[in-house]
Length: 342
Image (cartoon, rainbow, N blue to C red; front, side, top):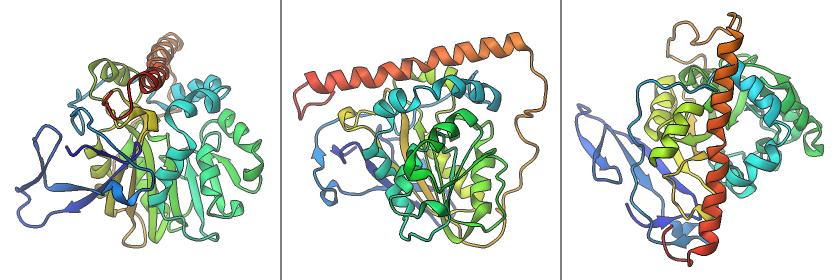
């Protein structure tokens, strides 16, 4: 891969190929070809204050087992996980994985070009991402939705969000009419969706014709220990999976932009809670053409309290690894001379 890093960000544009679909037109970082799609990396020359450096090669996405425990990738576990994490979320998670600079970079492809746009922020949590949205859109036109009342309580306390509509809801079953919003934004939520394809299908449904969805989330790490903890904790999709989910839902002009803290110096193998921003445009009015069966998770179904507790504790324990990773990377950035890979 070219050694060009955009201060921790990089934009990949998807081009769908025509023909028999059997051609291979692009390579991953080890030279293995991607079937049917190609990625185009934009030059860092267009980004002010960008830095260039040699970085270690790593795969776009490592291989992943077809099934993992992923103990917090369920609505009930996620509900209780955030019951406690909401207390320190803005002070523990954001500084290491979701900074203001990253947020603004990730929202740029959403094209929030009018104050009068209707925007839904799905999985909006404490409103950190919403604070970036209301820089460009009137707060009264923004709806924050989350399943966690504890996270939403934090959002309600933020003065710039006082005029936003704040509601509890399910990302896989949105309480908005079809063709409702100009923009759909979801940051740091897909990790907990039992059925990501259903959530992206809902994003398509609620958007107006020509509306754009912007989904921000983690990317599956390549470092073996990070892969282990990622598989235990929650969903870390591969970049190819994001694109596939968007395409299957019916979106066009699908693009993927990599994001990360500046002190990572482009090193992504350890895993980022916020690793990429994916956007797509709705080409036709109405619901998504994709048909799905029943939901993956029935939240009304009784659960064994002991099994639930064990799942919750194991998932929360795995999560601590991703609190330590940014501390480690920050220390390396302070110690290793600038211009050298870390």
